[in-house]
Image (spheres, rainbow, N blue to C red):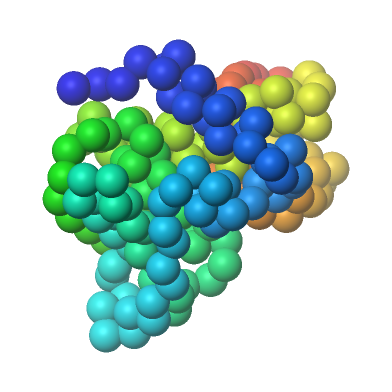
Length: 181
Ligand SMILES: [Zn+2]
């Protein structure tokens, strides 16, 4: 079942309105805790493939993150699992592999719940208004200045450059020379 974009935006707005939510990079771990969702960092060296998981048992909601991964990846994982936590209601355990998440940052995800969790993560980590304000008019990805802008912006949002570029393309803010993607 696909999740309406408006619902995703509304949940993200609610989170960003929590204390500290206006900080950038968005303090995803703090916001999860403020919303009553525990975040547990666990080294998962034995299974590099696991990015994280989301577990719900009634009112108890826990997000697990692979502490072996780089901070930027951990942030994306937390934001993605938060999407599962806030957009889905059923009990159980959901495990996300690194492969699944990597794919999911591209347009290749097909599972509606993964697509929704990724859209949620992108909106939470890179709020649309912030991105539009930061790149007024768009970024030329083929240009040295554009490359520098993407690097600085990705750092400012605490995301990978790949995630930012995908976001820019999605919002129609990325250019390749003269052509709009
Ligand atoms: Zn997932």
